[in-house]
Length: 398
Image (cartoon, rainbow, N blue to C red; front, side, top):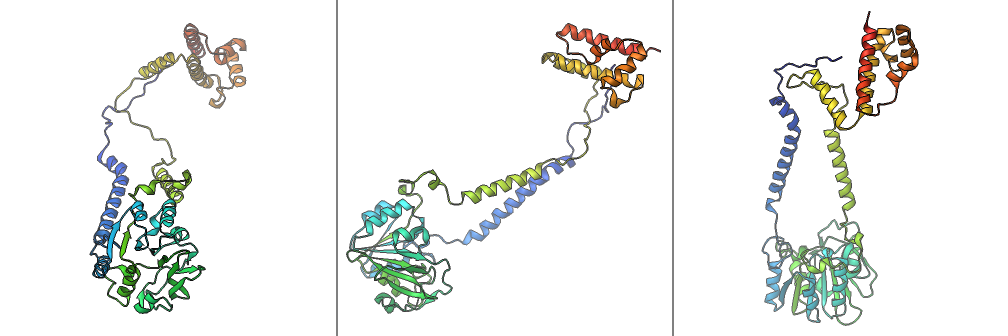
């Protein structure tokens, strides 16, 4: 009842060099692409200039030149990076320059507006967008289309703009309905510089559409220096606020809920991760195809395989599976001996009549033997195996 399943004894289970290369070339290619991209980004950004709009920086994008010119005019410049310092500096003799107002959270904007709104000082916002305009400059909106021209003429009655003349203010364009506002340096009918007086006192808010007039490399062009000095030198003290993500006030959530804390690009980031996971799954998925037999590294006797499976059945107490396997194997071998096709070997209505005719027995005992219920204990399983073996020998007997 057993058969030998052998394989060449010289077969090795160790993968060949070709197999290792085939399996790992995809990963190696991905690593090469990532390394190349990293090197390219490093080369492109190797000349990046730091200290943008920093009055301590001498880089072309820095603002040290305007700070030194203000010092010659007895205007002190103080650099701060926290909201608490900015609120403490509020006063009628102070100009607050906010270099990157869009980096401020909603809570920070509210606190900053409360401090400078009626302080009597000046607040200058450099290139603010929609995230900060509604709070820091109420009544001002931004046009979605930026200015196409950098150098613009003042075309307004603001004395500082008229004295400076043409300047590089082209950038964001704004709209406003605030009473008494000065709209200067228009581009296609919309101003790029606004001065909005405070509701109370002598303070005001200046909205500047581009930072070019503050940069070291653009200060000596056109009327940039004149406009920058007049806007920043109207008070004896200048507080240069460089918002930082390290500011503790940036983590003060106020009345915000959990969704307000989620970054704005989380949806697109999640979608990209999903697409990447899908592509990885398609890349690593096995293609459907015919089964490939595995070459065994050693020769295994069929009897050992049978004994191993029998021990597993016994350990799992799976007498029903063991009995089913014995009966199925015997039915498969008996069917061609009694003239039944292999497709009908497991059909009682086809196999049992042929066996009864061959052995001249009644069908019920044969039905219980070949299609009956599973044995109740190990002794019954052994008895079933003996009876099936005896049945097969009887059918094979000439």
